[in-house]
Length: 112
Image (cartoon, rainbow, N blue to C red; front, side, top):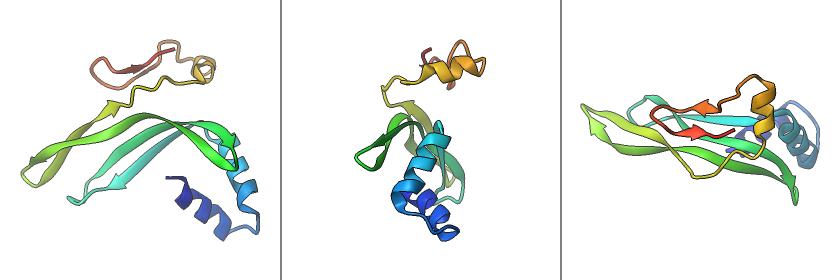
């Protein structure tokens, strides 16, 4: 998920990849990955928390992932499912005024 962002940054700047990764990991808290599916619809495929750097790589904490459940009239159907990981930096949500977490439909929630 991060390689495309790294490539876009590198195409416009003459920076080492490690510097690019450090900049990305310090600037982004949550990643929302959208993708165009085979039915030409766009869906949120994954929501991940950016944890920082480790051994030269950006560490991600997957929170939600799209689970395809079938097709109806040629359209892909599915939903975001919790990956079972708790958000590690919930203080950033609290500082943004989100005292009760992120509601993801039904009763799935990133707990604060």
